[in-house]
Image 1 (cartoon, rainbow, N blue to C red):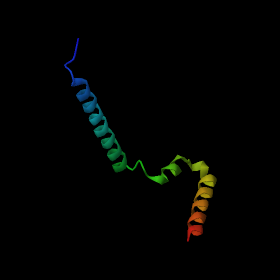
Image 2: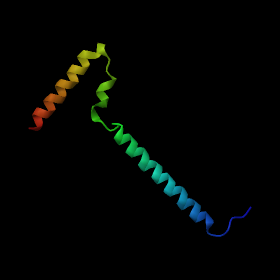
Image 3: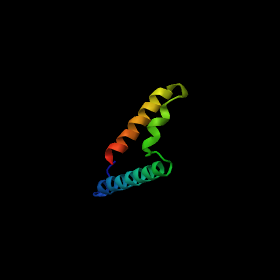
Image 4: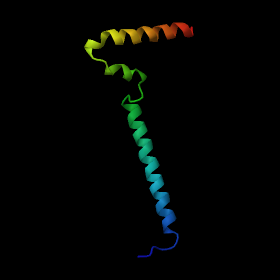
Length: 68
């Protein structure tokens, strides 16, 4: 099967454009659903991890004091 000349370039272009649209929609969805929240890393702690969580919160507070 032989495709008409030049059609392959259009197929690659269309595939690339569709891919870019899907990527933009994915990033928009992630932004709207809070997937870029920096504090999400603290959610992984359990109740029994209070010591570690408080230690990290103290470090974070110290960093903010150091910046001022």
